[in-house]
Length: 192
Image (cartoon, rainbow, N blue to C red):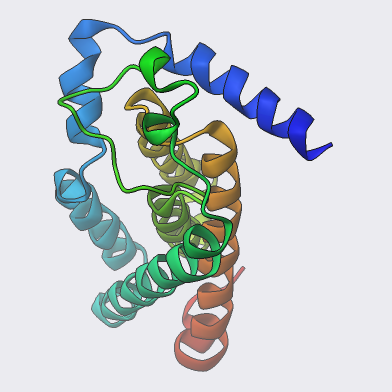
């Protein structure tokens, strides 16, 4: 069963990575950079400020830092360093078939994607804060995390399974931090 899943993951990766277009290489490369998204982080904080107040915005910022801190450690220490699954860009069996941008190959191991963990963690945490005030409009935050995660497949550094599992891990971390913040810090300021 595991061999079948790995083969499916590899085939899906080669298909998705093979859809590359030269005009998309640089945008995808930059979209994968964490600092590229600073304007979006600021926009998210602005939306939280507008929906609630500056105190909730500051607690949200602290929550995002906590989500990323937990996500980084867990994705590396409990997954990458345990499973030691080579990234597609580092896999000798398929390495020559992988589309690489700017000779970027990432670290040695890729399961789970720290990008997917962190961005889905942030997106879930902020989504849960914004949804009571913004309704369905808050879903764009999750689409943002999905776009960033897809860039990792495009760049050849993660299999789809790395992304899906990282996204689930991040969503769980984001949800957990949201529950703690809602219960102990934000109390009645955020209602679901």
